[in-house]
Picture 1 (spheres, rainbow, N blue to C red):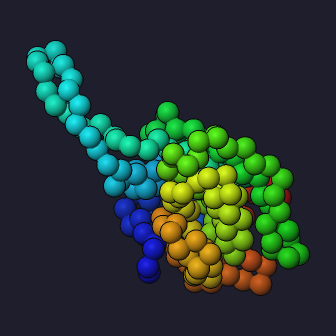
Picture 2 (cartoon, rainbow, N blue to C red; picture 1 turned 90 degrees about the horizontal axis):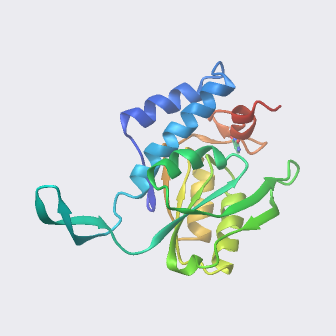
Length: 209
Ligand code: URA
């Protein structure tokens, strides 16, 4: 699938299966989402450019690589996107965070914005937008629209599960935004849920319903 990387790492696939299981507890689901966030962060940053710097080890001088160029912004879409955040920040502790508050209107399935707060220098940063479920893609498209309005130019999207419909819609609206996901499932049902999916990610991670 063009513009999509499916993360097939065995740890990611194993943890995803545990999360899909409807018997998984809220605590277990949240823990797994955090762990997969870390693993997906590893994948989404895999091609960051390196530069050489001079350092001194206890045994002498050497030239060694460090990450070069743009700094990162993690942009979770509230509320389920927050489930990835701690895992990602544990690998990139210096990243800034942009919060984007969107919810799905249950009738129209359109994205309604209620909060937006982002660093002012988005244009100079790599922005990683995160939401566990890429379903209709209405929220993802709206979030990326807003980030671009605020200057973001270099954007990546990370999710746990995607529906083919959501992938097509996001790629059509923002062809410059590459997608990382652990799985592209079968389809969306009439209520906009991914099938077989894992249910409502926000409800499962916060124990609401
Ligand atoms: N959001 C969810 O939490 N689950 C879905 O299946 C679709 C959207």
